[in-house]
Length: 509
Image (cartoon, rainbow, N blue to C red):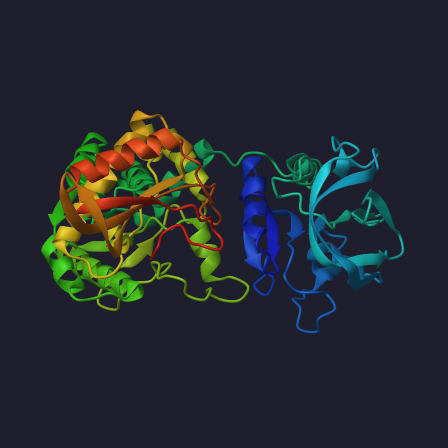
């Protein structure tokens, strides 16, 4: 059994970051909503209680049966989690006179405390709370303070229970990873054996046992997740895996041919299906972005189902679902309010009578790439920028037509090639060209033009949850703008998006 750390989510925006930081230490962990705690704690070596947007004083705030873990397993409370422990054990939590948010420095650190080994005096930490602990329970003691927060960190003198009023998982907390390592490795005694190599070995063994001699069908997109899922399944079941790559007419320029060639070199059994006309017909006259996503998803399922039925005796549908999708589907507040439609986790239309297998559903995006490296997948494929499932259909604002697809394909091709030529591609997490529903006046030669406007977008990010716009060199932007206007018929103006996420999203639709 894989030993692990259990992270209980009270709704914090940083919960996934806690898990990703623990995984960086080669330790397996799982996130569970506070109201869906596993019935059995077999293999659990320690528990981390997350932060929360709630106040512990709020009668509607998240609550758990703390005594289920207390004194039996090491427990670390972070922000709300720390305040909840203090309140439940007889301490006092009150509204702070000033909201404590942002960078702070530890003025006192107990150097004899194992949790804080390697954490220096004046170490920078990240605070984010409106309440503060004003009195500790009996047998508890202060182990760290900042200038403004007396009880920045505390411990129970009797049980291995700890609390932090700052966020060690946030990168602004300079010794945060060391602190988390002290907890999960030195206090919880959790083995550091969660590696890409161990994941591949155990997953291939598990897939062989689960799938047996059954046939599996997988829809490839050319992206990282489906590609890694395909190679992993191929290692497990070989020729029993049947892959389908659908050209929806909304791919990048030459992508259908290029991706098919790369898959053939990887030994995968792939069938390419050209269905551009079917998608464009479905999108005719549609302007609403959410409706476009749903149409693209529906037509894809129809095309995929037609092809899957041509493969005799298929029993399983493989999906490239990754861990953030799973977490979101069982989040504290249920599935999040719809910002934009994504695939349903483990969901299938009623007419597709297949069982689902998701070999990557315990991995974060960066872990998927590391597993891909272990499997020998080309860095060129693994380091590709994320590309939305609906493709260029949501990078064309308004109605999608064949002519608009041509324009944005040409613009995107010039832009991405230039990023690579200028050695900027790997410095950017995602780049996009967006065709705006705007036309502008221009002058080309001696003629007045009235043509399309395209927007270039480039962002830096770790996981897409937040993103900052990329400060690309002016010389680069000038050259790309000139090339696009001179080489792409129908475009006479190029703009650059300097919005971050939040408040904007990475994609425009």
